[in-house]
Image (cartoon, rainbow, N blue to C red; front, side, top):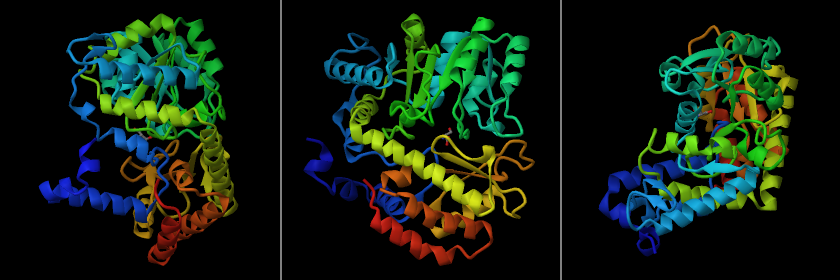
Length: 412
Ligand code: DSN
């Protein structure tokens, strides 16, 4: 039995300050709505794993090959998580130890590119991710990166990818992004990589849940390595994971441990196992269908209201709004939305003239509100609020609507 079950007020009695902060976060999440595309609300079962005594256990190594005694439970948990992950995605191998998506990418690049290796990935400003070779990320410092972007239609420029790979001769080509709303042609990426003897790494941190549900194309079976986080559309605990072919699995494992991490967070791995179990149930597909339907509806409605959406819509859970011409920056709308009770994030749009802490864009996403039971009718209400905020309406006039919606759709 864990402490919370046996003594629910333990933390409050022992450390009122920390308890108050955590209570405040409960209240914040309950009374606001999250439209941040990378966030979600995990199930109570997933969250319960974080309180387990397994958090106290060192388990450096891999199941049956640990550097500590007493790892039989950690072994069982990790094997279960790996088996469920491989079943869910149809993968040949899985490493469930990465603490995050960034550490998963770092380990995968260490395994495939080696020290000072050359990599090609999408630039952050065009919708990629820091860990795809940004100059201030370890992946841009330890490797030699070149970055591709998107065309004027907001879609990946495959000709640029081909030319860059030809010129830079990377060991690893990366496909995937953190603000890219369109499906990725993984086979086209694989063909380019293969032609130049490069590995293909697909980072599916954002659409992992949609991919698991079979609603957007999967790179598994095409890419050599697939990295992801487990807490976005996948709705698991905060963490990372690497899927791979059997051929490279050994290299991946040693790049995770001992290459870039020490002891795995077994309580998080237990949470991943629970989340993968949830994702293997039929209701998960229904949830992901709603995530996608809500995002399409959100994009269509915003466009109908005269806002510009990068690439003209979405194939997944992300809607990237280009605010140029509205008189508002991304930072302006983020702050105004927060005052109304909506958590959103400012985001660069392609060719953004503004710096990253300001930006000309707003990235919206539907996973968290869909977990709370939102359908297209509630999305319509959110559209009215977002459009009003962009047009300069007083955020205060929307606060009660957001509170009502929040109360009617409690957290899981
Ligand atoms: N946190 C990720 C996201 O918001 O997409 C990027 O690291």
